[in-house]
Image 1 (cartoon, one colour):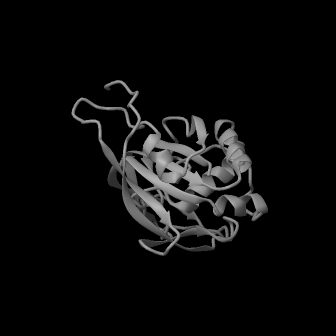
Image 2 (tube, rainbow, N blue to C red; image 1 turned 135 degrees about the horizontal axis):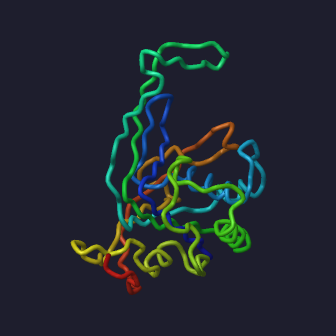
Amino acid sequence: MPTLLLRLAGPMQSWGTTSRFDQRDTGKEPSKSGVIGLLAAALGIDREVWNDELKSLAALTMAVRHDRPGVLKRDYQTAGCASTDKMRRADGSLSEDGVTSQRHYLADAVFLVALEGPDRSLLERAHAALNNPVWPLALGRKSYVPSEPIGLEGGVVDRPLLDALAAWPWLAAQRKWEAIPERLLVSIESSDGTGALRMDQPLSSFAERRFGARSVRSDWVNLTAEVSHAVA
């Protein structure tokens, strides 16, 4: 069965699934809702739309290889907190109350995401859109831009999920203090219900924001391809 591979690499990325108001969380890996939203942006699917193409993308089986897990960080932000500041409310009135928020993110993370499904033409359309997106692509938040192209050359392969993740070279450029890993952690969607529940399965348009549960289990893959990156 064909598999689409994506590279998610950047100085900052955030994949929240429980964020509310002034507290913004992030998971330790890309969420399915975030990855499908990224593909929707590349394809130009409006956030108000829940069409057959988006349903087909949401039905793909997803796995994530942790090439560089990154470091969990917290950003403390303020808005309108100076004594002279005034903030405009949604109804147009002015407020003198400042707002603080805490936003968690992953620093220096690199992931290889795999999406498997029977419709190769859908995967090829998504792959082409990643290289020529309709709307700008971001890693969970608009300001978190990728440091490398998300679309990979030859990113649609005729391999099942785990085989595709094992065969693709390590994406994180080796640093002088790092050893090239022999195996990498993989989080893979489980059809038999084993693993942890994640509430990030899209069930509606992104404007409506309805998400269901899916099961995700952890596994390891041994790298079978040579690393082509030079030492940084």
